[in-house]
Amino acid sequence: MFKARTLVLAHFWVAFVAFLGALALGAWQMYIRSPLSTWINNPEHYYRSVTAHGTVMAYVLPTLVAMGFGYAITELTLKRPLIGVRWAWAGFWLVVAGTAVAAVTMGAGKASVLYTFYPPMLASPFYYIGVVLVVVGSWVWVALMSINLHAWKKANAGAPVPLAMFGNVAGAYLWAWTSVGAAVEVLVLILPASLGLTDTINAGLARVFFSWTLHAIVYFWLMPAYIVFYAIVPRAIGGRLYSDTMGRVAFVLFLVFSMPIGIHHLFADPQVGAGFKFVHAAMTAMVSVPTLLTVFTIVASVEIAGRLRGGRGAFGWVKALPWGNPMMLAVTFSFVMLGFGGAGGIINMSYQLNETIHNTQWVTGHFHLIFAGAIVLMYFMAAYELWPQLTGCAPLSPALVKAQIWLWFVGMMVLAMPWHLVGLLGMPRRMAYYDYSHPDLHPQAWTVTVSAFGGFLLLASGILLVIILASARRRHAAVVEPFTFSRAAHPGARTPAVLNGFGLWLAMMIGLTVVNYGFPIAQLASLKEAYVPVIPIGSR
Image 1 (cartoon, rainbow, N blue to C red):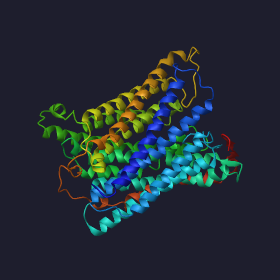
Image 2: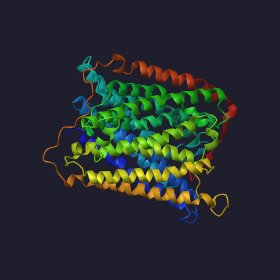
Image 3: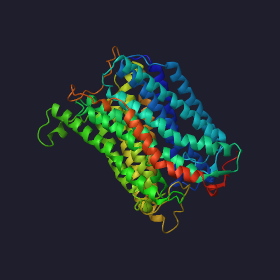
Image 4: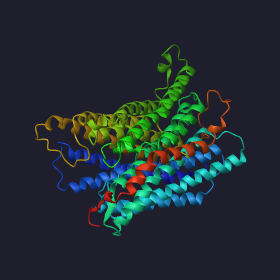
């Protein structure tokens, strides 16, 4: 067991408890919008729930998982105690305090602006203060990851950084730069207006700053999942990692291409010119490259596992794979959802095709398949893999783990696929209710019922996850095997210096962001006409 296990456990437990609450809210939202329920008496209660659901899923869950997983990776890969444990605890309590402040504010109905903020709507300042505390707590983690890597490299001059740690620090640096957009939006534009210091806000500029964060945050979410793909999956299924170098290339390409693409979320916004919308659309296509590299590399690694198990011929290795292994099941389901979600994303990134599905349920289906489906599933697997190290328990029950994985996969597909269908038919998202008696809407009513059923399957899966983790201590292991990461198929291969550090890639990330965002930000900041009256939401 590693020394920071209590710290890591605290992060995972708060993340999953908050996650379970957000799952319950999501299932409720699906139910009250479906024909199974009467219309909600107060639509604000629906938007209060959507705000809480989105805030936990977008900020709290992935931040705490990335932090806890990152601390575990640091000790397990570098094989030395975590530097700055007291600071790590301080960062954790900042996140917890921020979550509590935001949760109370949302529960009181003073922050129903959704997690994307949507100025000129304004929530209570306490909601924004809570979100800021979460982000500041995560910045402590970013600093500690950089400090620990620097100390290790100083003591191991010239040695290749372990792949898991390389991806971990790449994710930390990505988040540090990604979060700047939303931080500037809140601290400079939203919070002064929410505090009553001004009665107008530059809504267009605020939306551009949030777009800085809005899409790149997805790649911060996925970094822990991709670390599991590269550093754990091949070992867990009895194979080898096809290419360590390919993993490093994928991680640094996410750094470069994740940032300068967020304005593709503003295709329908008139305050941004068509030229920059085109540039961001073109750059968005580039971010598919590291994902395609990852799919190729992990499938090749899985093939190695199949052939090591005796698989022969062009496809005989598929049959030879350990399909009874929960990790094999999880990576398969994750790639299926990543494939469907990524295909939908191609529509979203198209300047023309986006017009057909803008602000429809298609968008909801897309990001649920990517984040809640492909990414969150691998969060589960990261926890399952670490749990014996964290608690001293015996290996978790494969049958229960597979049941939880199946419930999550089936529930997500049943939830999200109907959204794609009705999105093409024009069903708007984020509506508190639909009038199914209308002849144009009645034929679509069954899809909302189906999605509601999927939502309850996901809730059941989340409950089972917590039961599995909470009951693990009852089965104490006499000896806990040391944790290991995947071995490369060619372990002696030299790691290029450019893929053993981040200087070049950080410079490219910052440079591209400045080029792609500099002019729209400067232009909107200089326009007095861009300021509009604020719209208070709730009793502030």
